[in-house]
Image (cartoon, rainbow, N blue to C red):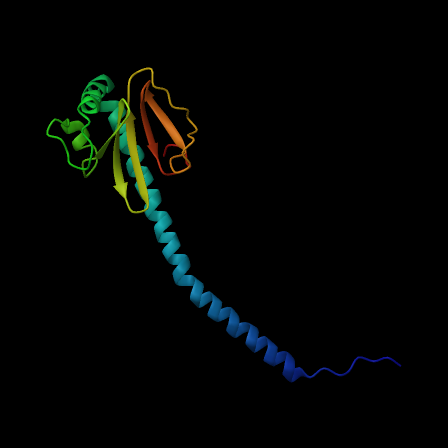
Length: 161
């Protein structure tokens, strides 16, 4: 007769205790990490909403041709860096809580805000400078057109919030 050897109830309990201890240790170790990731995600989401609301505010309150005229003048003067030029219009300087960094790129200007985990900005060029909606830059996957030659971009693969 082929019978299975009798099992010891003690070894099953021992195995169950080990599994529960490992489960509790894993849960304890991952919980703070999970909470930190959630907080980072929450902070980035808030930053996206703030950045997008600034873009909407700009499109509703700023004349894009005035902005373009100022930016193209900056491009001609090759004014770059994180120093805010005195000539920066107040509507750009005060669009967010801090003024933007300025980077001259070819014949256009990029205004960038943010830090840490999230950045956003405007590219301002001539009316014939076109940027595709889906960017080739994986860090800034979308270019949202304001008017031809002026685009808003940010580090997030989400639609406007």
